[in-house]
Amino acid sequence: MTVLDERAPAPTSLPASPPSPHLIAAVVRGHRVAVECPPWCVVDHAREDLADLSDLAHYGARISLPVPQFSGGPEHVLIAYMAQWPFARDEHRGLPYVALEACDSGDVTEIRKTAGRAFIDQALAHIVAFASLVEQLPEDPS
Ligand SMILES: [Zn+2]
Image 1 (cartoon, rainbow, N blue to C red):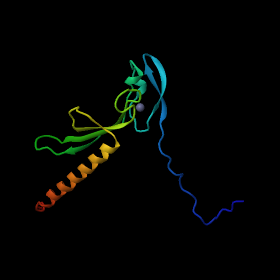
Image 2 (cartoon, rainbow, N blue to C red):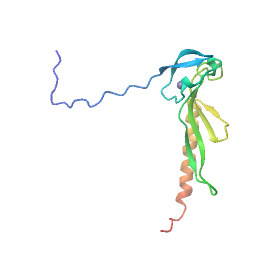
Image 3 (tube, rainbow, N blue to C red):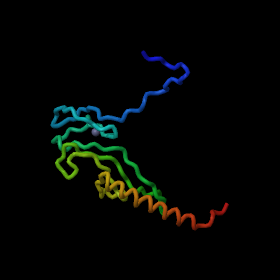
Image 4 (cartoon, helix red, strand yellow):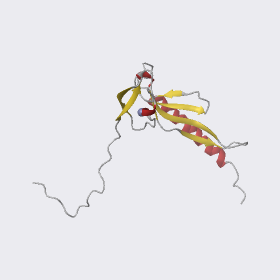
């Protein structure tokens, strides 16, 4: 028999469960095929008509760092997004990776977890060095 302690606060929400893939209908040469789509994917697969299932790609939302430019608006650098070609036979064996572009050049580096962590270490060291430069400046005039 379980005795409930009426003095204990009631849970306000259920514990968060990790997001899981959901089934979507991909279209391959006019035929609908059920495929798992990861929770980070933003592609509307129903709008595609693929020549081959190996052409199916999942992409996540893009992030970038806007850098002020002397002339014109900011340039976006360190553009990154999740990507996966689940049925491609390439070096990633269908596993997800982070696509990274230094600037919006279209030259994409495909980064897996170990390389991503190494890049994070480099980027954080760069930010610390940048902060050191900024702190050497005199305060802005008011
Ligand atoms: Zn997808």
